[in-house]
Amino acid sequence: MGPHEHGRPVVLIVEDELLLRIDAAEMIEAAGFAVVEAANADQAIEVLEARRDITVIFTDIQMPGSMDGLKLARAVRGRWPPIKIIATSGRLHVGEMDLPEGGRFLPKPYGHAEVARVLREVTIGA
Image (cartoon, rainbow, N blue to C red; front, side, top):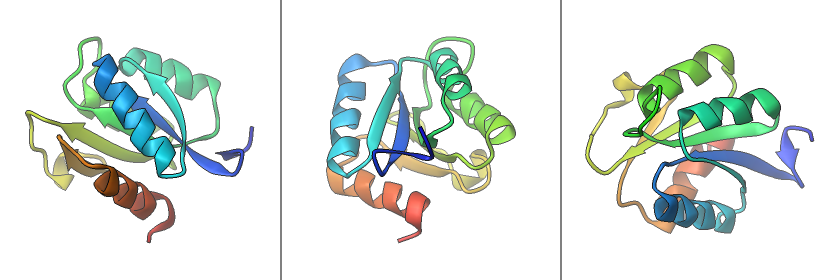
């Protein structure tokens, strides 16, 4: 695959809560993006190592495992600099300074329009 799956940018959703991951996937697909899912940072790294078409990582911040979403964001920026980063949390509020350069924070609960707008902003700047 090239940089887009069937002409659509590919978003890697990293969310440990299944129902939230499913909901995010439906929102992101409805916004016109292709979706790949991971339940934690370790799975996300495996996906990123196996695929070269991921455009955006949409990650929860508070996750169990070897890395939380902020550590994952820094790892992604270090290893895959072109990938855009959107971090989300319902408990923590982080500033843009807490994320790698260009990273965005989206507080939970988020709506369909909000997700679509932020994804468009980071992928096409509109």
